[in-house]
Image 1 (cartoon, rainbow, N blue to C red):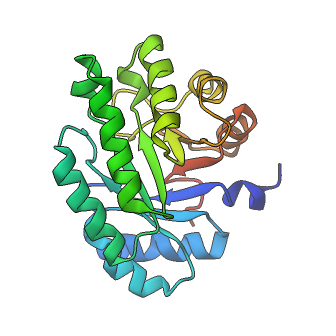
Image 2 (cartoon, rainbow, N blue to C red):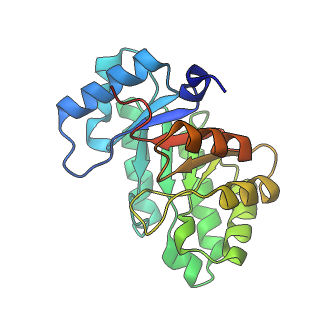
Length: 212
C-alpha cells in the first residue's frame, strides 16, 4: 500500500492535556501537507483551528473525552458547541458505566441523540475495547449500527490498551455494512497502519504517522 494512500485514512491527532496552539497549528500543517482525512483536536481549539485551516482540512473533535461518564445533556452541549465552532466530525465516548450496569438502552439513546445533533456531519462512537468483554463488544456493535452512527471506534488512547487487529475484525463482522471502523491507540508505524486497514479499518487515529 502506498504511503500516500495510508495518509488519506488518518485522523492526525493531538489530544494531550498540555497541547498548546503551536502543536495544533503544526498538526494542521502536517495533515494538510500529507492529505490526511482530518485533524482530531481538543474542543477548546476547534474554532481557532477551523479559522486557521480555512476549509483545507476537516476538523474532528472529541466529546465526553476520555472517560465518557458525563451525562447525555452535557455531551449534547459539547457537541452542539463544537459543530458551531467548525467541527465536521465528532468522536464521542460512550458511558461505560451504563455498559457495565447493562443499561444498553441508555447507550443507544445517547448515540441517537448525538447523531441527531450531528445531522449530516460524521459521528464516531468510541467504545474503549480494552475495558469490554467479547459479549459487550458484540452488543455494542449492534447498538452502534442500530443507532445510526457513522463509525465505531476502538479506543481513546487514554485507556489501558489501544486498537487490535482482532477487535477491528470483530467490528467488521458484527457491525452493519453501513458502519465504518476507526482504529485508534498504538498505531505508530506504516506496518501497523497497513494491518489495520487490511483488517477492515476505514480510519486510523494516530499522532505519529504524519509527524515531520
